[in-house]
Length: 536
Image (cartoon, rainbow, N blue to C red):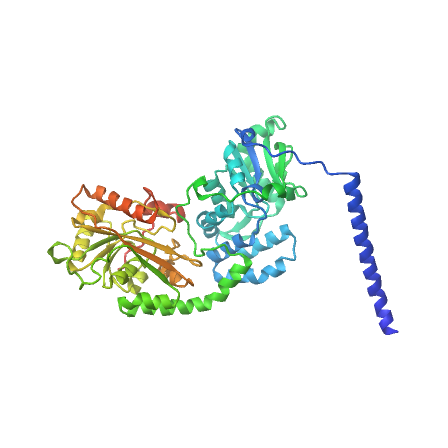
């Protein structure tokens, strides 16, 4: 009897749910048969958007749908807040998946942003996120944006502080509208209510939309939305702002192509951040699982590079997963004693290489099988202390720097990275001609690296001393070393020699030559000139 009494409410609830589902299915069938949805208007051609003011949905047009917001919030959490904050977001993500799209995005923004400095989050949005947003951009959507005269980008998922740098600097939009984050004393305190965010956006867009608002319906903007936006239309897509609106369907976006690198509106020469991959939930879980093993690899590899002889560094590194490739001709001096057969006067050789990581001179020394002296500029005191090879610090005095380099070269082989800073992408920065003023022949060395999990470079203040350790924390980091033919120093002036060496390095690596400098990189990524105070 007790079992029967307990089963009655369960059966009643079961049949009630069945009736509800059946009624919903019946109503859905009636709705589709009696009131068919009108077909959406055809998508506009690029010629139709020429000269127009465009209001575009970021998640539907600029980024390839479907857009997963988790990797971008994870990037902000790790790069601006640290690995512990990223781990918290990863652990909470299964619970956040129970929420709706809008509530889940606001919850991820709260976990990733609240308590961080506003300036640091803006730096991540300007220096870290553009690389990952560009890799997820749609060629067709960016082409539509480029055809318009003025563009307002609207996002319902990402806070404006995360999108502003990417959309303004790399896509070329004029204004960005998205969830706003409240700041108290320079620290982010939470998302602003939608009403307040709307009021802030209207004030910011008034200069841009002034003419269109006064003549709404006549000279209004063109709206580009997604199929999923029909149920939650943003106020900027209303007839008050847009004279016509076009919705892209899932069938339309299914054939959209990723934006090729050669079609980026602005070349991505510089970017920052430690993570070299998009941290989707499975990838982030794999990274946190690997971290304890990565720390053990860092300790072992650091000991090998610091204390073992040069001739066994490569084999020992290969046993731990590091991959080295020595390309082309005979290594200069590789079978001779240090300094034998070098420059005039019994001095050493001058090796000039492009700059990929702080380990470049160490790898060159290991490839040569003999010690070298590395020329450093604005190297942190901690990195100088931990360096396993001799270093010669340069100053801003050109004559003094030339004398110091000549003295170091007289004592033995000298490795110079005249770019002055590292570059991750396949570009070569302008070479400083100071090395060519020494009047000795130059041995160019082309270097290239590959990483899969962590970048071994950073512009974040106070974190550069950890660059080599992050590189060695990768499961399978790779170095490619190629010794190029000697370049005579007697041909032309110092600037001509520097340009000739840059062309040879670019030809060997397949990199594009630029006139950018260290100052350009640090002003783009960090807002400073990248000078580290000299050690007392």
